[in-house]
Length: 262
Image 1 (cartoon, rainbow, N blue to C red):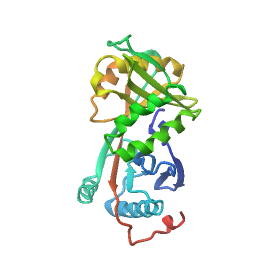
Image 2 (image 1 turned 180 degrees about the vertical axis):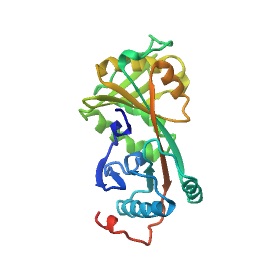
Image 3 (image 1 turned 120 degrees about the vertical axis):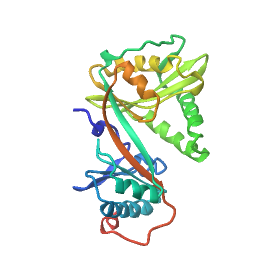
């Protein structure tokens, strides 16, 4: 059974109990999706405030500038939780999980002028520079910090990076995260200037045979136009997951026993 549990967390599980799992990646504190609390149940507002206090304390201790929570798979927010998030200025995201068997992939749009290949030591800088342009849309500091992350991923045996080139220009990249049973497509980017020209399809047709008999997974934002493309290509919608995050600026005055253990 495919669930969000098969999606890589990019981090380490540092605490778990009957209520939540706490994930932390000390080498990438700037990556909000790598440092979060995964809830195991639907909390009341008062219960959430206790969970919030635990994560606030933990993240302040580790000098993180955000807190982030994921709700259980296929669980929506209650009205009282939504009201609390609005009052406390949380940002909300809706993620959708899709899966496909490689042999079920279908595409009506191709672009054989595109050259797709795995990243090598010779093309790693090109891969990094392309992603740096994308990351600069967040901030220059964020883009600079992520450069080392891309290099670390290049040398990670559980990952493969892919690059697409058109007219001697990098126009797309994606990452493969490998496990025994699944291959996850991550960081899937096609340059805005060449959208809807079959480049994304060519990239997928390059990597899908590499999956062999493994299920191919990907996660996309619920408001992304790409989700319609994935369905047309044969991907099956599996489930959704809600997230909530906000920036934290001042250290809290409280302490919790759980946080003090860290």
